Amino acid sequence: MQEKTITKKTPFEQEVYEGLTAFPKYLSSKYFYDAIGDSLFQDIMAMPEYYLTDCEFAILQKHKSAITKAFSEHNAPFSLFELGAGDGKKTKILLKHFTENQIEFDYRPIDISQNALDQLQRSIQHELPKVVVNTIQGTYFDTLKDIAEEHSKKKVILFLGSNIGNLLHPQAIDFLRQLKAVIHEDDLIFMGFDQKKNPQTVLNAYNDDSGITEAFNKNVLTRINKELDGNFDLDNYLHWEVYDPESGTAKSYLVAKQAQEVYIKKLELNITLDAWETIHTEISQKYDDKVVGWLAKEAGLKIHAQFSDDRAYYKNYIFKKE
Ligand code: AVI
Image 1 (cartoon, protein in one colour):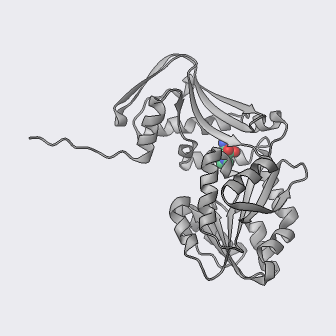
Image 2: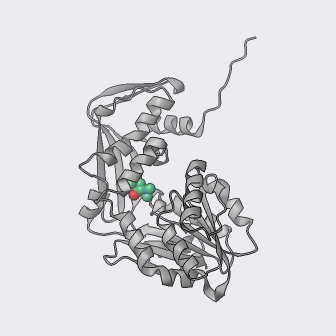
């Protein structure tokens, strides 16, 4: 008897299959990020409409002394873990301030990309040679155990960029619970949350005229075409952004401009889209103190301190175990 080969699907294959056979259709924004997506995201962060990066930068600059005081309370040496460290541009504001003030700490940047970590380590060695850097490569999930295993020093976990906003509230609570599980009494979590504001300002941040966010959103289709041998025609889709000021949720869609059939060879999957059918691709949640307090409480954490920019567009919160 001839044996049938069953090839196991990768998470990407599985999630694309599930999302495109569901109604309404969806794809996860975590698949925006490959080398092209990373570079598009760098371009987004440099756009004038995308205020988030500048706001967080301004907060770290303005409040670096107070943040340093909170991190180094009782002069206890600490390990600074950073989830999704990337190029560390914002974090270097703190690292510089710590070294100038003889704070005892070591820096443990975590990233999925070894290449990003190597570059970060080299740039810190060059710019801030006194900083002790020990990189950790992996997803947030794999690396939580590395954080959990640190018992000798106080821990501070950084999660910048309002990355938490790409999670629905139940997922955000789950993530915060996982962080809570790897910290002790005096340890801290320092996290960025984009705030509710004039709805037009939010909408503009995700709807630039230059088409960068559109290309970023469509990159998930590009990846399906390249990696799963699909035949999406990118020109047949609109990038569409909506923002609900009541819930604080910005949502990105790809909208089919005409009825179409798509074949994804690697999944042996034929899908049809009606004219104006949607594929939901991303949420970017905006917050206020009440919602952040609620998320923290649900996860067994409490807000210990908070820092804001001058326009209150963005906030960084420090959480501790409740
Ligand atoms: C990474 N994340 C916090 C960004 C955001 O604001 O949701 C991703 C992004 N999507 C479109 N523009 C930026």
